[in-house]
Amino acid sequence: MKAIYLAPFGTIDEEVLSTLEICIWQIFGYEVKRMSNLSDPSFAFDPKTKQYNSTPFLKDLIQRVPHDAVKILGMTNYDIFIPMLSFVFGHAQVNGPAAVISLARLRQEFYHLPENKNLFLNRVMKEAVHELGHTFGLLHCADARCAMSLSNAIQQVDKKTEELCSNCSILFEDITKQIRRGNGMEIKQ
Image 1 (cartoon, rainbow, N blue to C red):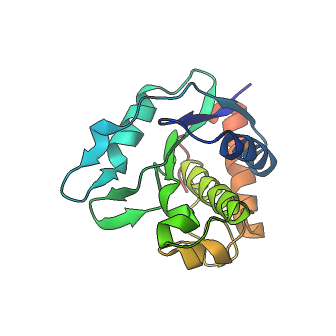
Image 2 (image 1 turned 120 degrees about the vertical axis):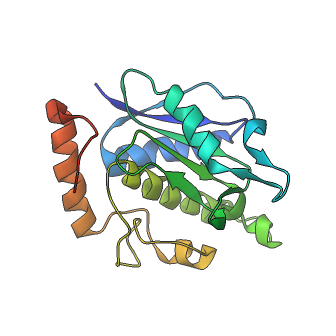
């Protein structure tokens, strides 16, 4: 049976991993497995921005996809960016096997505010569902409450839920039926 794998780059808090296991299983219906901690991502550090480029994370994950994986979600505590954006909460290959999320900007402490563990875990779930949704072929959604809505600021993350809206849920069900029938991940929409 296919599974979604969690791949921590460096040490990720146990509470984050266990919360994601439950959330991902509930939303996507796949077994969730953990990989051993991957090495710290020094290979992705950009001295100019003092951040980590998310593309090398994806390349590394693609090389590590287990044979029984339907998708793989990497996570890091470091702040990530893509060359065209100064930061991203996550990055995924649309219709591909891999995605990565950054926990850095999901923490209240990043904004010099007191820690709020529940808010942080909610944000982590939303971004994990969002990026995994992209790997299943889902695009950005106009429904601001849908996990697939675009988030360029933490306020937008806070407005959405970790659930897929009814339209995105229907699309996901169609995609996952094809995957389970053995048509693979090369699904065009």
